[in-house]
Image (tube, rainbow, N blue to C red; front, side):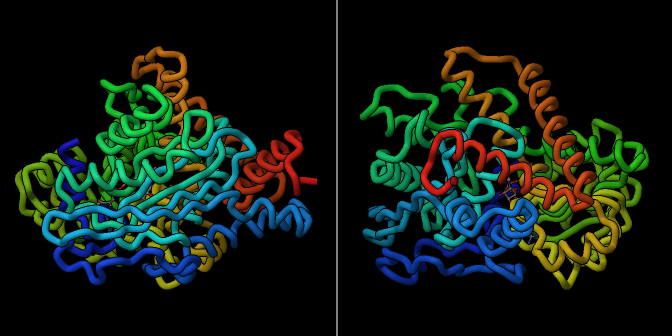
Length: 464
Ligand code: NAD
């Protein structure tokens, strides 16, 4: 999608972290990296993995999980770290580190994205792998949780370097992949083209195997509706919560932090539902318009090479003005959607949130400290493990279509996505009501229970 690519090029970090140009690589060889240490905590007060463990422990306490079972379920089943040596265009041979963490496979093949970024590290990959375990269980798709990445500055790579890294990484981890073992998908700085190379590399040994990755190009077995799926799922999660709050779409003012794949699709679909987008930010800044921002016009502006903060001067800019990122979080609105980084809603800004609900499009956007503040201020938080699960739901549909050698039309994909999001939301909401707990705790309870049940039924060691 041209607009997304443009937005990524403007983003300091492909939507996540700052960049290191290839020409300024600090060391010739960074492998093996020190495990267990987060190198970039961003605005978060804790590392990503600590945040996931914090929420896990809250739910595990309520479920009365024994210490033994807890330690089996909270840790990863397998962590693979490999070296990926690449001859770079203008920096000689460099050895990158690649990771694949398979957190839990009790419910089915491991599933999770592959991220390319120079600051990828084991702590981050672990955290995201654990989130995938709970997410796939909460929305009840038959997968376990995994995540992977390579610590390379992919946005500075040319086409050939990107392909070399991808094929080199798959070559090292192919023994742990497979359509019935572990199925990667795109994440930060990886896309459909990268998935095509992964599928092709895996196929050299195993024969053509489209179902080994999801998020592929449509012409190679990708699913219609996959690109929009996470943003669409965010919009569907909002819709359910709005009903609960008695909030009409035409009264809902929406603020988006991040306007990449997730944020821009959520904005478009919410606008179609009748909501008004009144604030948008990306890595270049933030804008506000009480009259509403047309997401399509903003996307055209970005696609034409404009920066977000130049939008207020653009024709048809809906009376928008530039504001600071801090002001964006504190805007008067009904719905705030973090769709950028981890840890962006933290103890220092959570008290300023005026939204009635937060729909977490990003992974891990809210720190535990912020979560407490939001809960005590009565802000309804729809957690990442539920709100941004649309992507993995449609990845599941892609896998099913590949296994059946059949494709569905987009209406069918969206219809099935809507049903699954609604069902998951309602199950979590009932759980939250029964236990008088926030949606996040209820969601983790549902996810953990399902994983534990699957492990027990399989007779896996440690599940009691
Ligand atoms: P993306 O790279 O397409 O977009 C990220 C956006 O965040 C960009 O607009 C970027 O400019 C903006 N951004 C970066 N730094 C920012 C900052 N400091 N303040 C405000 N905005 C900033 O990424 P994406 O695919 O949209 O993913 C966004 C988040 O959603 C990530 O946390 C990702 O892990 C999560 N997520 C994505 C998917 C998916 O299917 N794409 C699925 C689940 C979760």
